[in-house]
Amino acid sequence: MTTALPDGIADRAPQPSPAVSAAQNRRTAPLAAHLVLAGTLTSLLGISWDIQWHTDVGPDTFFTLSHLMLYSGSAVAGVTSLAMVLLATAAQRAGHPVGDIAGGTPVRVFGGTFRAPLGHLIAGTGAALFLLFGLLDLWWHSLYGFDAVLDSPPHIGLFVSISITMAGSIIVFAAARDTGWGRVGLILSIPVLITFSPITANAFSALPLPVEPDVIGTVFFATLLLVMGTLIVGRSRTALAIAAALGAVQAFLWWFSPWAARVYADSVGLPLRDNLGDDAPEMPAEIPMFALLGAGVIAALLVLGRRRGWSARIVPQLMGAAGGTVTALSMPVQLALLEGSGPSAADLLTMAVVGLAAGALAGYLAARFAVLLREPSTAPATKD
Image 1: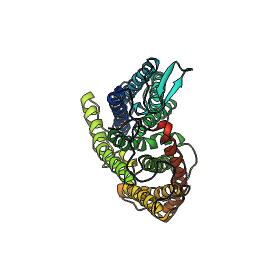
Image 2: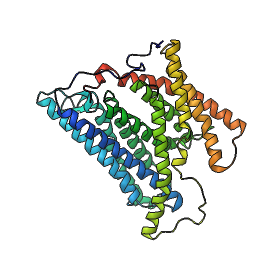
Image 3: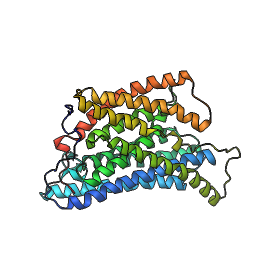
Image 4: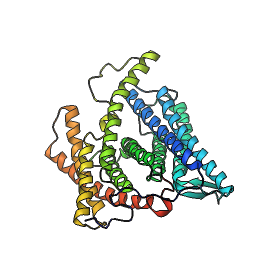
């Protein structure tokens, strides 16, 4: 029996949507969406490289290759989104309909001067903010020289800006969920934001919390995005696909980050720190290694809820609470494996409480975000 989940959340193959009369949407939309995704992936590689550089080599200046990669990724996403906004505006003025598949619901900007697909508007706004905070970071370096911390004011602004662009990328692919490339892109874009979320959450590191803010951010955003992606696509196995993609990202960064830091240091004649050991790479080590377990619980509860006819008001919260608890409990186990020391009972109890609370909230929000992204006004307008 299928539970009465909100419209569009049932576990079934996506239904065809009306064709778009503007044929260029079918050509430009996938290219633009994948360019935005490529930009966010480039930024992710740049920040992982930069964090590892700080760990293995030391402070840096504004003009380094890792910073260049970070900024170029944002530039690619921003320029692509700007081009899509201009194309949508030109199509509107020519009297041609702009399908939602081109990046989400077209919205009026500046009183209707521009017509911007929602996903590209958000991604482009994040890229524009990134540019502004990049100029602030350059000024910050000119005042204080070397940069040694992640949570400086310009960096926090930069990280929030990148997160906005990554969220825009998810919206772009969610709008094309009725297409094969849209579903694959959604499965690939969600792990990018999950991987980046601990860095943004690090802005709250000064708060006296029982658990590190980056760990809470990892549990909350990983659960929220796993549940949301599953409900957007409408297939329970989507959670497993997202978790598998997240594992692939972790494996690549595990190799790439220390390799890039070492090669770049050799190329500029800088030595590595004398006290380096066999520690795990900084950023990849914060990605949940057992995300497949949390994804499996989320998928199983969705299937069970449908078969038992559970209320749609309860199922997402149950998915989030259970998935968040499993993810949270896996974090101290992961730390123990990497550092060789077992977690205490108190640590596990604390993480269970954190996972339950953060996961339930994540499930609640994920259901509402999924419904918003699946509304008829934001439904895709064509099929492959």
